[in-house]
Length: 455
Ligand code: UGA
Image (tube, rainbow, N blue to C red; front, side, top):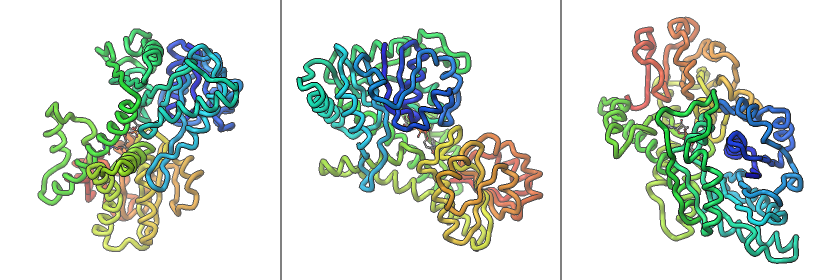
């Protein structure tokens, strides 16, 4: 099929490259000139494992442009809107970019039938709103009604940064919402190779063993939109629940990692997203839980569970600082080394990263903060040059003379550090393992005071 993807962030670019790999003719459009210039040179502007390789393999089917006129919207069967929907101050999603994209697309619809797909996470009701924007833009540009030229669909994305391509090629489900059967049919056809799992897997992204047909959920627009918010919020509250239990575990002398195993083996609960730690960050959970709370207010109902999950989550960041204060007694003049800066491993994304709040609070209390990360430092230096954090390329540089070490991001290389040697260069052997990720036994044997979360 001929496909246009508007927005080349994690979602748009991954979707575009994956669909091109599956044999579709894909044009990725972004208003960011720098991003498109890089992509035209086969450079991927974000860190996402496997993406540069898949882009290279699929490049014959991929086109990049900053121009709506050049994107070929008038001749394509599917247009994805995958632009950013950042949080506004009141928690609602900022739909400025969605509106601009819908208007630009509407003015150019010309194919017999085009499905315009909301892939961005958008508030409930946005599908209808986008439909109205498309119609108005069409009428303004062509002077006639679009009749049956287009239909709107919602096709929420469930990919995780760091494993975005695996999640796209081998998803656990595909959700397609629309009021029009034709739109659902078109998207089902587009996703057919994924649904049937009958495409040849890229060598560097092998198909999980035993994976066969993928379930597809077809529903109305509002349900698809709410599925996305409900899924992200549920995952977020699963984590917050474990963080809440972790505080009790610590008090009663229990170990949250054993509790996670003990409850996760119950299939009704499931083992995933039960890791206690410094809480969730990233571009999605914070934004989507805030939006869900804001949407519920519009309808005069509260979302106390989701709200509580948010409070528990953001408290985890303060908990790190409080724990360091308790351990070190005085933070002024002390040096804290942060291992990892991104919100999780395998990404260079710093949006809502716990490290930012932890660093800010420590600096406010007079501590010196040094931080390292295998891939996120370039972003940290560019986006947060004035945070007061000393960014170090090498972990050992970060750790030298530290009074406390905080494991912020679960990069395997931090677990594999030669900790018996590290102890010789640090000032005080205190480790706060913010992800319960390091080898506690080994660290304690090597002479460290180990503090985990809820253990
Ligand atoms: C999340 C969802 O998992 C995706 O399904 C969804 O598509 C995406 O948001 C989105 O809406 O775009 P992502 O934010 O990339 O994906 O990352 P996750 O792997 O879900 O991790 C989110 C945060 O939770 C990270 O900070 C991670 O460290 C933390 N986490 C995760 C925990 O603290 N404990 C866990 O057990 C799992």
